[in-house]
Length: 594
Image (cartoon, rainbow, N blue to C red; front, side, top):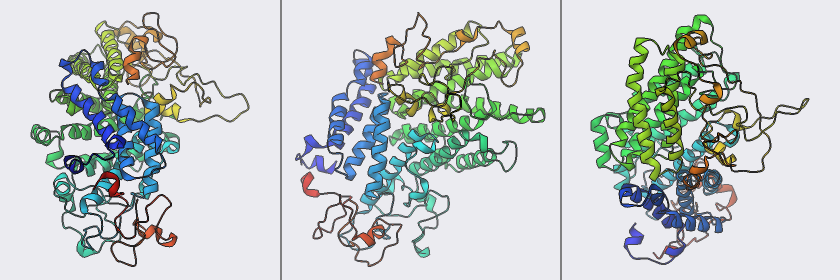
């Protein structure tokens, strides 16, 4: 911003970062003024030319590994996610991970974290900006990887930088020490006397969010490896540990980060309302993922090697299902509050999927887990329907920011119509019908079973959505999914359900918004699995010096400088301007007119 305000226009037309910032800015500006536009699609198209130009610049100079190019790639990946361009987002996420590794921003620049060394080194704000950039890459990789090892490119053990500081310290360009990803731990090379007495005071919302992303990673990986997990009701089980870790994180939130009226208005005033909503979204979404082990039916979640609960664990199973419903309702309540505060409160690119899945969980619990004919169930239903209606209203409001929101709002409305029509056996949007895995066939007899991430991932995950647009692909693992009668999962028996409600046919009660087979005549699907009338909306869906800048002769290997001590300190893509004594993170200043 300083550079732009100073009027330095040299290279502006070739600045990918500037173009993608304009693209995202146009998207949110248009969303705030959507009433003045012809349609939500006009808002979606507002920043498209800038994004297209940014992508051309990034891919056209892919070998130009520089921090600002990485910043542009991270933001472009975010933009493509918002536009439902999942293939582009998937590939860009790999570019961001590789650029981050090449730049080595996963390491502290030097041991001079407090910037007390020679003035020629990078400033405190420059160092902090690079830390934040690395953590952005980590969060993007976590979102795309979704707990699948083969899709994850960045490991926590390779990130040896501290967590971001709070906004006040950053804006004042001050240096400070915060904890690392592991709680109550610091960078190993710091001297004990330099450690702050109250490090949490230096950490803000970003640090808490990143820590929970790490917990979410473990939860998603656990869900995908139930075959090797301990029985969840055991005290030392992985489930118990993850549940306790997640709850401990939530209990550790300071008052300013809790979802309370006071915190909401504080964050709205400081332009952080979207970040606060996202923080609580990811918590309750992850808790739903933890407790989904209590729902074995593929109508709601597909689990590999799902647990069988013996009769003596009925109370434990009931607790799992009740907690699942509780966190889904919490998501709906947060969504209703967020809607009151405008588009910025719904800025999380995962928001449409989270809101939609929330509807599925609530409807499933009300129609499949509990006895819908009981008086208390009817009361619960009457309390929940307004939350579902609010979710649908929010999905419609998000259509000016996310093309996929129209598709999901239509699917949610269809669920609501079935419930209102008395179809108590509704199975909300089974994302795993027999032929959902992209036309894959069973492994040939006598050959090893193929295994692909498709089988255990949410159908609206980036990887699954990206694969839907690939015409040529190998067949992943596929197991037949039997469409069982409603109520045949856990909880209420089929016989009891049939006596209370008229059964709807299995085929009629399953609605997959991305299913690419067996289209109904009323709603034809194209080859990509998207309803034809929604196709248009969905488609819119260096690190070092040649010498040590601090003047020190030794740096630990956990810093960027120390890691290159045996190779003369320079990878081939980094500048060799010895006389400038500037960290390559800052880049070639002449390029930007300084």
